[in-house]
Length: 202
Image (cartoon, rainbow, N blue to C red; front, side, top):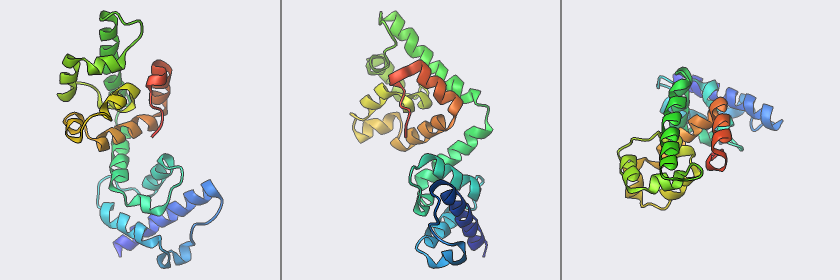
């Protein structure tokens, strides 16, 4: 009974947001249990409704924020749920926690670039430098910065799965990037400071 109630809350929130975005009904609340979408709402409720961060409406709004064409089955995706919980946790923290993490790594890259006589900040050369690469594997640098750096992601995508996981998993990078991009104030500032180096999309 409890799961049905939580699944109904998801369905109601989803329909409301879907109508607001697309101006037509994907289903009717009256007979949602007879549609192919019901299993997604019910599964999502059974998977996540006992978690501390559970908020049917908040979770649906998050999905609509990160997906251009949202559908109910996306609510069941564990990666989406993890990204949502990360979003909830960082939203309740002071934004300065993320900003300070980003700033520390940015300043390290900038200082290294200046010492090595680069005209501009050189993120790619910084991370490919053997000493810095060693620190990278030790988790020294901000995962938020890594997630939005075009140069880092170019290098990261050329690595083997084992090498990637020694630094940070693809799932963690996705979560960190969503967290940064969902913070409009921080993402606008990064776009201004980093220019083309900033990955401003999911």
